[in-house]
Length: 455
Image 1 (tube, rainbow, N blue to C red):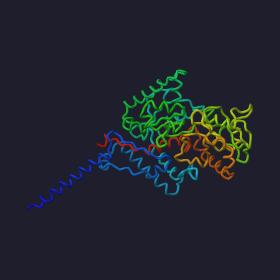
Image 2: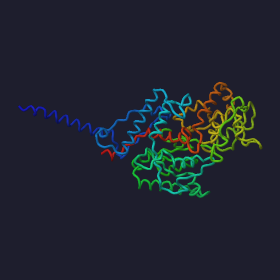
Image 3: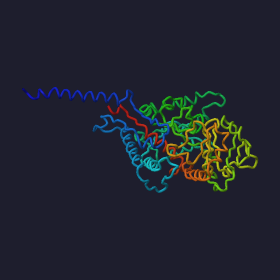
Image 4: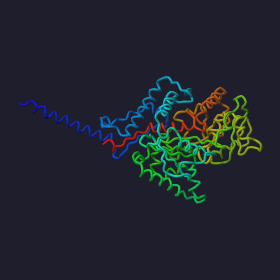
């Protein structure tokens, strides 16, 4: 009898197993839509979610010798960066010509350092050129919302910008919420539809002209807004609100801000468009005020704060609506050990950064607030959190902090200040680069696969 006849059933069985295996792979590893994007579900999104990633199964077709698509090359590049960051977490920090992160202010200084260097080496951002000023590509660079304009202007000339959309890791939508309000919204009309339509129409234009928005359903795109209306206007496009990276000053987790996807950015008041006259303050021994706050009754938290503490000058407490004539606000900050940073109508407030600028320990009285750069910075080492319900015990809480701990908080605040400084032009590790680094982290943790290119 021919021996090949005995081998034939086994050969058929073997081929059948391969076909079934491929079928199951397509079910479990390939979605029905054209793109897969996966987000971290960590409640505290810090670098640990990246340096210890859950292994993602790799479809067998990606391992073939077929030439990689642009998107596959980008994902491979990001995979190399993730591996380098993971390795850095176990090794000593490396040399840096400007700054080597160290100390308890960072969750993991080695990981942050390597991640930052990987960002400098690899990160490419495509800025859509569609849209004309003043609504697109520009915004005011001064006042309480000036960071929005400063970032847009810096992004236009940034070395991270690429003119080739096929090489980009993320895509910036360069519209300004401030200019939308200034030029599109009719004051007093309470009609937001023209602003919604402007954003929606803009994304429709880029969707029709480029493949990238639809390819990822907006997951590798980002917007930036300091105005309080930014989160609401982002809802004008469902994928923008649901999938895209939203860099927001108004980072309220109770209003749809997602720690694993969105980026909290600091609100910074620049009276003249620069930090001139805002940086520095006396040593702790020369600060005679225990805790300081001055501001109007904007929202529930301030109402409670002023109800309990307004004009009570006991044990160095100085909390009032308006300063007496002749008192300078910044001088009071520089005289104080602790500065109340309370939410107004929304969670964002420039007081937090003002305190860091001038050497005052920020006391955060904010419900549902996502702190800026908290994926890298350990805010407990340079600030104090007080729940709204504990406002009546404010003085007792601060008096109970040992002097040694206060000095450490103040020293740590001086160390992290560099990450909140606005430089013109931007400098390494400053606020512009920290915003980019936060976006970089979100992109690192978003895996995109275009099935149309793989098939």
